[in-house]
Amino acid sequence: MNVSDAKRALDSVITKSRVHFYKPIQVAEILFRDRVYGGIGLADLSTYRTMSKKWRDAICEQFLGRVSTSSAKYQDDIFSATAIPPEVLVVLGEENRQKGGIVEAYIYNKFKERFSQMSDGLNYCQSHDKTNFNLKEFLNLFWNEPGLRRSIDKIYEIVVYSIFSALVDALQITIKVRFNPGKNDVFLDFEDFTTKVLDLSLDKIFVEFPARINRVGVTNAADRGLDMFSNFGLAIQIKHLSLTEDLAEGIITSVSADRIVIVCKDAEEKVILSLLNQIGWKARIQSIITENELIAWYEKALRGRFAYLIGDNILNLLNSEIQVEFPATKESEFEEFYSKRGYNKLSDINW
Image 1 (spheres, rainbow, N blue to C red):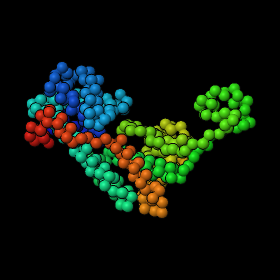
Image 2 (image 1 turned 180 degrees about the vertical axis):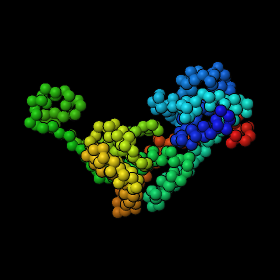
Image 3 (image 1 turned 180 degrees about the horizontal axis):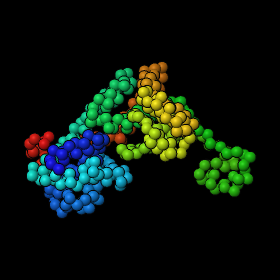
C-alpha cells in the first residue's frame, strides 16, 4: 500500500459521501488525534473504532447541528476493506504527520466545497418565487453537480412532500373515525381505551380531524423503506434510481401499510410495474407517480388558477424542509476552525 493507493481509497469514500460527510470527517478526526494527541495505533482498530465516532460527532454537531444515527454496523463500514481499513489509515497517518495535517486539511477542504455547492443549489429556492420557480431547473442543479448527486434522493423526497402536503391542506381533507354503534357491548368493556386512545364515547361516536402527510425525517444513506406516511393509511416511497428486486422487497416488507405510492423517474415506471408483478406485490401498490407528473403539478400549483392558494405554501414547505435536512454551515465559523488547526498555512492543499 503506497500513498497514491491510500489517496484513491480516501477519494472514493469522499465521492460516495452525502453532503453531511460523516465518514470523511471521521477519518479526518482519527488522523487529527493521531497527529496531535497520539495514544492510538492506526494499525489497531480497537484503539479508535468506538471513540472516533465521538470525535466525529463533536465536529458534526458543531457544523451540521446533527450526528449520524445509522446503525453501528453501517457506521463501522468505514473501516471495511472497500473503504478505509487500518492498513490505509496507517499510510494516510504517516503522510499526514509528515506534512503537518495535510490529509485532514484535504478532507475539510472537500467538506467546504460540498457545502458551498449545496448553498448554491439551495439559494435557488430563496431567490425564486411562484412566478419563476422551475422544478426541472431546480432538480438539475443537483443532478448536474457530482458532489451533490448523492443527496438528490433527499431533495427529491422534499419536493414530493412539499406538493403533497400543500395539496392536502388546500383541499381541506379531513379524516373521520367512528365506531359501529352495534358494538356497544364491546365499547362498554373497553370504554377507558376508546376514551383515552380514540377520544370516542357513547355520546361521541365519531371524531374528525385534518388529513396530514408527514416525512419520516432526516434519514441515513443505508435506510430503505418508508419515506412518508399519512394519517389516512397511505405510505409513500420515493425512488429516483432503478428499483431492484431486493430493494422492492425491502420496501414492501418494511412498510405495513397496504396502500403504497411509489414516486419515480419516468423511465423507471414500466420496469417497476413489471418487477412488482413478477414478485406478486403489485396489489399493495396504490399508484406510481412519475417525475413528469410532479413537474406538471408544480407548474399548475405555482402558476395555475389556484396559485394564490397553493403556490406560496409549497415554496415555504420546500424551504423549511431543506433547511432542516441540510443545515447551513456558517462560513466564518468554519474558517475559524480551519485556521485554528493551521490548515490555512499548508501549501498544495490538493496533496
